[in-house]
Image: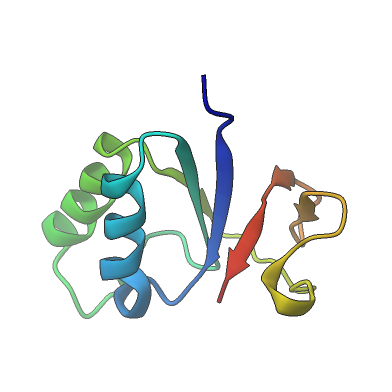
Length: 100
């Protein structure tokens, strides 16, 4: 069995959306987490039903969401030394790499 790797996306969701979905679709061995500093993935310019649909679609793909939080210390070269990053609110996330 292949070991599962963990990718962490610290994102303006609409900019990284294609790469997040591509990563989650190409490898079943890759756990993908999105950390987003707003309460929803899309901003208030979008109707509530679109915002809810975006979140539902992401979660249905097995992508973990951490909303209303952020990672301020992005590791050099995107690779955490100890395989973990900590969010501003103290949540520890396993991550083999971080994409911003």
